[in-house]
Image (cartoon, rainbow, N blue to C red; front, side):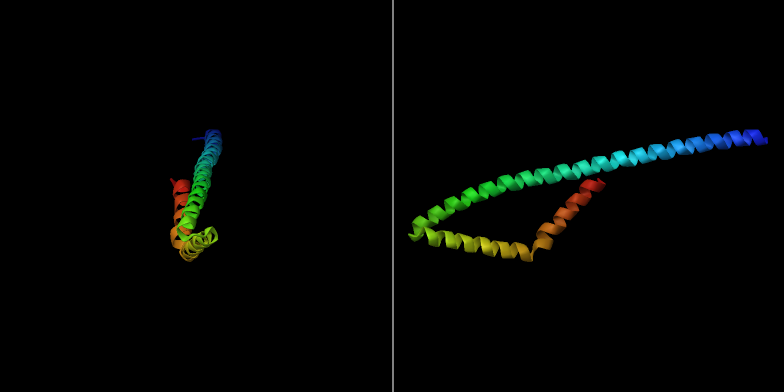
Length: 115
């Protein structure tokens, strides 16, 4: 192998290496965009379900309060009992937030991102 042939081969190798790096970078960008899209779409779906669930819960709470108001003979007392139930539920959720909310959400996002 003479010097010119060696220079030509090393130039070709350099061009191939540049093209490979460019393609790898493009692949990583596309992969990151796809995974980010999956995570965002999952969060949007969760948000929509939470919105619908909140509306349903609000209507069911109103119905339960009206029903208990007839049973207790006092609507304010019924809604106070209902508020106490939600306060207790909120305290329990707060105490177990890491186990029941934070860890599953983080695990789901990580699975979406690395799947």
